[in-house]
Length: 206
Image (cartoon, rainbow, N blue to C red; front, side, top):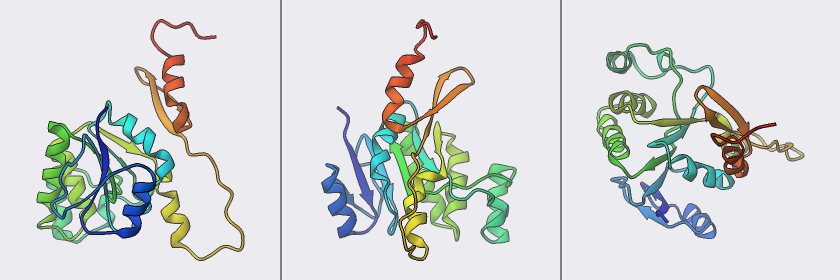
């Protein structure tokens, strides 16, 4: 079985304790190494959706990396300074694209995964906006990137606001599964394998 773990750029006792509870090793290194076959890079202060991690590891079987969208309705042309926007436009060509939440980045340990990590670190060295830096790295490397819905950051949204007198109603988080060329269905993360089996090629469907 391939190794799976979390990489932090700085110590975080709470995160390390939670990772241990979920059976995941943690590496603390500012150089952000691909320390595992499937690595989750977590930025300081980010809440990890622990119940969704099995789905993320599964996605890395086919994809080089996976990352949630940051905000709907906010494009690359809406962040950063003019100089960095221009540099980004030279790579991306059109800044009317959504941004990614690099704070929760899943990367597979392969050539494309390493190239994405290296390009991101390189872009960060001369960047004021890490989201534009990640976007440039993504477009430079062009890895197979699985873009996850913003609901993967739901816990972050929940705890960043004011306290509510009663906990919000919890809705199931769905993930998108490809069942054929241009065909997708949505299901719960724990049902991904069942759906793939149900729609496997050659199997008759009711």
